[in-house]
Length: 151
Image 1 (cartoon, rainbow, N blue to C red):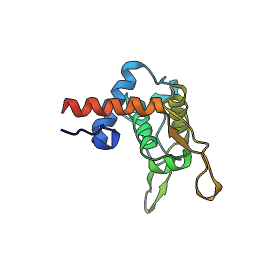
Image 2: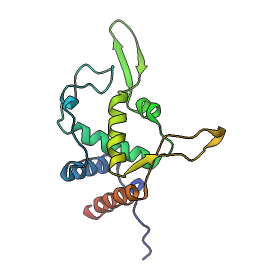
Image 3: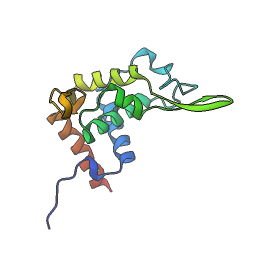
Image 4: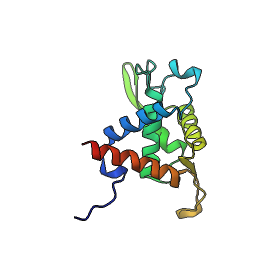
């Protein structure tokens, strides 16, 4: 029986993010700042997140996004986590998510060696964004493998 290696793409996004967030919390890889209890995740939100572990969940989701798509920068990730802002009686408009949260979590993931700044050139001579490291890829793939074995 031929088995191919299981990777992050092969498991459900919700299951992977929940499992990786639990792993990050269990291993204390992400430092929780003092502002985490009070900060909103974007100007389109009215309140801070209710879940006390929201920062671990966002870090896991960021790591998964960078794994699946290279060259993602801060602006692209802000767009991913943005949404529509309610202006009352006037029409809604799209606003980006919080850049501070994205920058902070990417810095924490870089400190752990999971993501790194991408210096490789892409079309048009541009470069930048983030990419997953070899260590990060192994870590995320091992979480995906654990999820598939548990099911």
